[in-house]
Image (cartoon, rainbow, N blue to C red; front, side, top):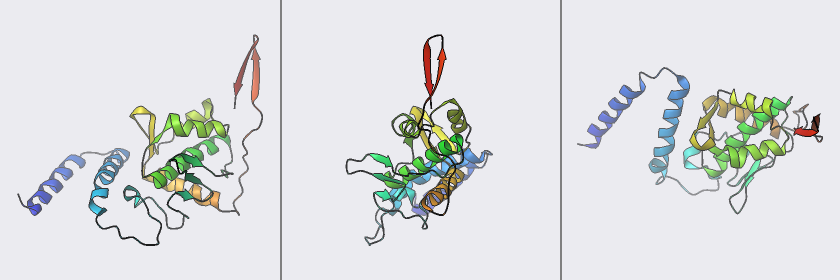
Length: 205
């Protein structure tokens, strides 16, 4: 078969498979997966070296030109160390509550990790939970709020990614956090609440 014939077959099959899908999030996940799988192959031979910071191939549509993105760092937001470790460097989430802070931290972490490493998925256990614990927003209420966020996509192995709408939300948070004129009212508590129950002390943040 010629390339044209293969193209027609591919488009026909794609249309046949995707057309019955009514759920927007499901459709977005499929298209995103296909884009991430095949885009690097398509553009790898077309990348031209320049002084413009390099954006990972599978994130060409993720970066916002208004965000100060560099190869290994989003200043004031996150960076990847020389050893490849992802670090969240923001000092103020600009949040209004514990739940707001938790959602912002998760979305910004996944978005920044995507830009800086090229991986669209983030480990809950290795990256997200330690960040939430560091900011003292790892409790039942915040976990429920995160679980209820429709834009956070959950995959096997405790991996998290963002759909299109959550990605746009994360971008807006990055802009707010980077804007010195925006003030948040929430601050991470420096004191752990303790509840004594029959001689057992339970701690929560």
